[in-house]
Image (cartoon, rainbow, N blue to C red; front, side, top):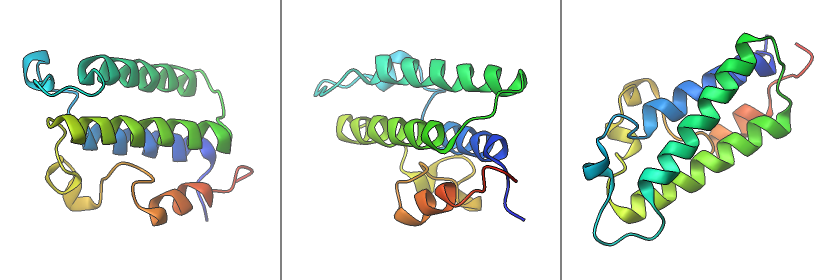
Length: 120
């Protein structure tokens, strides 16, 4: 049985938290060669994740578009962090041993998220 979109969103949030360096202090997030403010992007994404956690707790049911938007945002921010230097590679991220990575960073992950049955 496929999980519903609420379960899929919770899983997506866990994957994003495991793959991005939210725990790094600001001085370690910033690099001299900055192409997009890593600290501001992480702050923005943290706010988005907290918002979805609150909405899920209140019983809101995300649709596939919500899942796709959050996964896309996380992918883009992950790309900026990698270009700027501080992002941990997915293989070194906590939880990576269980397959945690930025959702959608591989086509199979995005297909897996997109295959969740909204009515289940």
